[in-house]
Image (cartoon, rainbow, N blue to C red; front, side):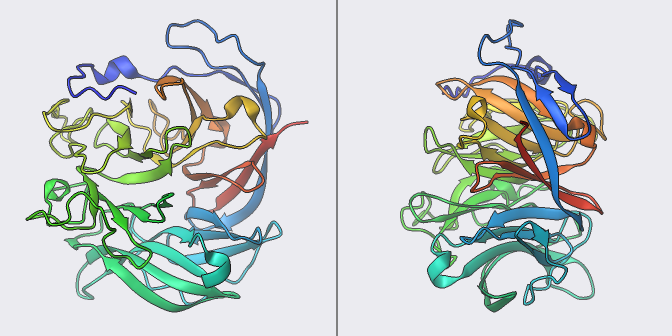
Length: 396
């Protein structure tokens, strides 16, 4: 994959090529093969017919879903609850022992992720925003860990608290375990210059041990003016994080300002430009420079915004035609607000984007998370007052 620092293209030139799909009923759809960027139809396997099933509903702005070794699912709700789905049924009683969160606007409880050795240690990790001052919102993105015993989190311990900011603005956070056994964590910095400041953990991707400490081999260890936890910097608000199974590289997505949402290939020590570089504009309509020496450009971007969120690479066998595809949750429609969807992106052998498809548009619900389950099926969470956990499977 080419990552040229001299990319000179306009946001409007990379507007996504839409994919057509034909509605087959309220829960069954026919997904056509994508249209290539040159306008020629791809001559591969026929359309993929799918059906959707609501596994759980009545969720209050769910944010993240994760599986336990026994097949149970954990789902976070932004106001500060962790819910258990057992045998496909949502337990009416939330998990107890969850830390208090600051849930205003987009802030609150975010990621949930079990430890790779959960069967032995029962560790579950959470990211959330907490308020540091009762008399006014001064909030910080926080990483905590607890042991899940039955329906309770016990021995909960804060592992990392990022530097704080005043106000209720959201700052997303995702987690992913690397094959190196380290925990990768995103932090946001929508406003200000902290994403470019080495003394701040905001606007970064962190690489941590399972104790929340700076991981050995991090690129800024021993460098003056930099926190040792930092793996990459210059990120705005990263709401998707996944390892590419083909290359082993870490990919993230992040929300741009007015346009300029991105997908990036993350390299140790890389600077991804925010707030100095973006393919979006400021909220006042001013252009931001597209290119700056020493920064890494995105491999995919959207203008107008789709507000990308959860992200995963499909590796299962239930959808053979989709193996290796990148899935991204979209909270906006890309051209018209209020038309959110699940976006499927096809990649060539070099992992360059070839085409995109907007799926589940008819739901008209914001897609907050997308995951592949242990059964090889695809699950999405919708970020609504009456949020849903939805399973996508092949139609018979």
